Length: 156
Image (cartoon, rainbow, N blue to C red; front, side):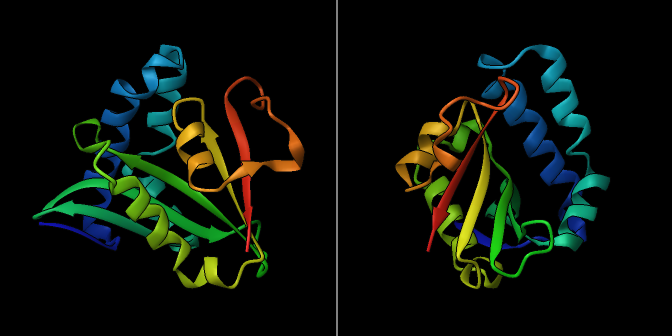
């Protein structure tokens, strides 16, 4: 049974493993090995524990196994803007509507509901997924920053 729930400290290692596996398989089509290595370093269990204290992190579970993760947080401390971060789903579970369910869950979190605007730094791999969910180019900029990430946003 697939469930989405709030992240706990006990989920840190499993969530970091989800990021690592997804980056190695899905994102490696669009990014060089050094970027994938850096992505894994910046999404270690310790980093995810710290990130979970700054926002609300969620995990998708298949039974007791963590298969996805996502975070919503205030955008630079704002109460009127939020940001989605650390959205990853294991490749074996992609294409089943779980990403949509996760984004919908994040958008119903109190940080998103209070925001007039939600931003997401979208990977080259996932930009069309987020565009399909109603996120548009921030400030009309259709090129990725530094060739790595698109800035997308949605207004409420």
